Amino acid sequence: WWVYTASDRSRVDTAQARVDIAEEDLDDTRLIAPYAGTVARRRVEPAQRVQAGETALEIQSRDDGMEVVVSAPETLINALDRNAMHAVTLAVAPQTPMMAQITELATDAGDRNAYPVTLAIPKPAPSARAGMTAEVTLRLADATLAQPARVQIPVTAFGQGADQRTFVYVVDRDNNRLARRPVTIVDISGDKALISAGLEAGEIVASQGVAFLHEGQAVTRIGVGARQFNE
Image 1 (cartoon, rainbow, N blue to C red):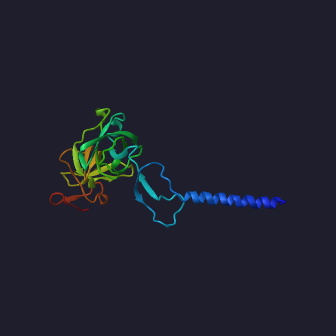
Image 2: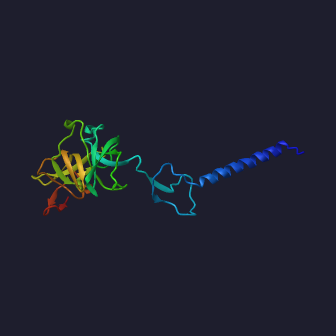
């Protein structure tokens, strides 16, 4: 017969707890995919030490569709039709448009006062891959809320004030001095932006060195496109 004391029982319980922890740690050495998919990227190497919560593999699945994120200007964000299906076209497959629905509208503006818009593509094309460039044609629920674009200028002409409003410097043709003017951006494509308010066709704006300019500064225009700014 063996007689166990309270101290013996405590040591047994402690040893069993260590065994349980070791078994859990052993189970954690196996990575089980939460869903079927394809390994898109491996972030760790065999035998590499990793920390708890560190990403080891990135998995992509097409079973639940794909998402595309675009930016909508502040003049259009309230006019988008959230119930409509919007066309998404890949640069690699322009003849095969996909349909997508808006799932999320950001509440905070990003660069150039544009709001990120997330759309879900339930049935992506076979050629679609994560990270590809896409063109999205957004449908409007109320076209009267959208302001037509009137002027196209380089994105390098924009500045942003302390009030987070976008502005440009317009050259006064009479005295060649700069006037700071707030503008409304409708869309940005490449290095050009469309302006719906704040500028008139034919006006001249400073397109370089905006951070070094100020209201009332005298300027001298040299050539076409290039600008020289003097005090």
